[in-house]
Image 1: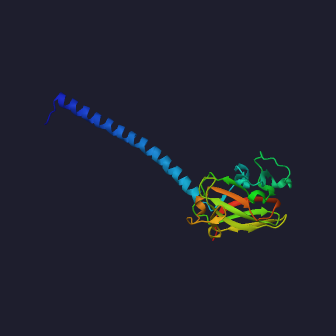
Image 2: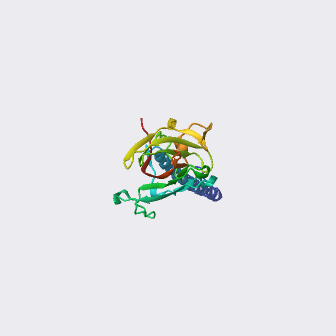
Image 3: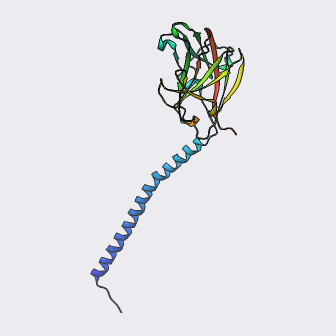
Length: 230
């Protein structure tokens, strides 16, 4: 019969206890490492789901609409933007601070004096747009004049823009749609070479009037949607 000395048994016991403790520490450490990885995976999955949405609606009231007119080059045209809620049935309420505003009214006076002749408004788009969108759809109510929808793929105020013209019907809401190939890259009224427009890259959106007709103007717009359409 084999016997073991007390010292050998004691050493074996210590070795077993050490191995068991080491295994516990390793298991705990791995669980700590895996937890943040799982959170990152969940966050990434959420972002992917957001990017796969087929509609991205701009909220008029949350955008900072600024005007840029020919005064930057010596002209005297003037314009402003006010916001209102379409349920009020009045563009004269001009409560720009209401979160319920869903219509923007761009209006003013276009002058051709002093080599002028344009008025515009634009806003920055801070949130990322979906990768699969291929159409812009919005509603406009105008004065019968021709306007331009302008997009920019950077955050600069003096850079080339992608421009698409559209006509309005006086005092009537109409739906208009744009595809990327409806736009032409322009800089200060002249065509320029630029990368093909991808709606995913749009950082600014705005409207411009430059129809060489002096006088007052008014354009209202709402329901600006970036969508995926067959």
